[in-house]
Length: 556
Image (cartoon, rainbow, N blue to C red; front, side):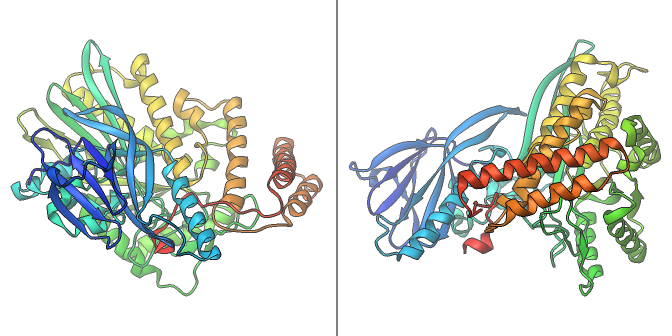
């Protein structure tokens, strides 16, 4: 079986069945889904009834069971992102959720309302940006993983061979995955970020690609999902791969990010920064070891870069992380603590060079993946930097972009794109592309986990911290505060306005360390209070909103 899925599809709908017709050249397959029995079978085009209502679709995202019964989710719009080694990469931009049931008369009023709520949740998730797919290429694996596969692997369907961590719709495809004969209709979808650019330096043209793959394990949103689960899966785990393609040669550099791999929580409680709580009774070593055992198997050596504050509420997490690494005593793991905010305070972001110099030798040791036009592997990446802050968003993305640039410098010099002694930072046209792409990556990851764009992107885009950037960070922080407290999950908070105004008054009475800090707190809580008042005035007393991520356990 070729590792492809059907690219062109038509959906034919009758009261009894869904017919998904493969329209690729030479294809005669039709996937039939019985709307009553939910049975899935494979047939041919002559079995499609002429009375069916027909529409084009671009893929099957899968099926899900809600209160009313099963629903079929299909991709109805797509946008071309670019071509990846002659494989077209698409972004899914619109979806349709189709009920198997013809009516809702079998539901009680309460069930009807619950089903409506779940549908709203599902549609909210589908409205998020960042769903990517290819019908001919496996987006879930890095270049290095794909280079070390067997002929049998190459013949597997895209669904079978995919890295299940990064098949966002894996749960939705479970019914199709159980039937290998229909796998060409099963489209693995990646959630994260992909950008592709054709670039030129010294008159030499190359493709530069950035891919972030968000894990579907321990899925959830900021504050509601932190740390690890019993299997060692970390919250907000993202694998980011930077790829260069020049004259047939391909180079890749992979990094990971993920929540501090302990059992800890940070539930929202109306405070700007809720207190992180480490579970005092859990067996942290068990989950911690499971996490790093799997990371070492997949990636090799682990260089942990912990960017959290080494004082205040974040200090216990940093200390616990360091203690666990020391207790594990695994020579494949190195631990580096770098207090990002302390080192870069007063807008001294040039001090990030301290960290880069500290890890330079380690980065050279980890190396990168490189394969020549003949397919001969010239270099392999021996491990990854695993970076984290509290959210694994803003501070983490800044550091990842700097490490990726250093690797890219070495790759382009080895490929002959950069001359000896040339610096990537001096290539103004490419630097603009590079910085904006990494800032876009930061925004995508942040919106998917925290609900807003990333902070500190002014540095990523321009290479320096600005006053305007600080203002934008304040605005995004305000939006995050609202979403994390009032939109992420189901809550009714009728006294929220009183509490918010009370906090504003408290801030007025409490001086900060500097006048700017005091002013920032006053402005934050003043705007939050006024905004909350108008939101309540508009929406009524019940603060109920669909979460930004539907977890399968809550649906099934």
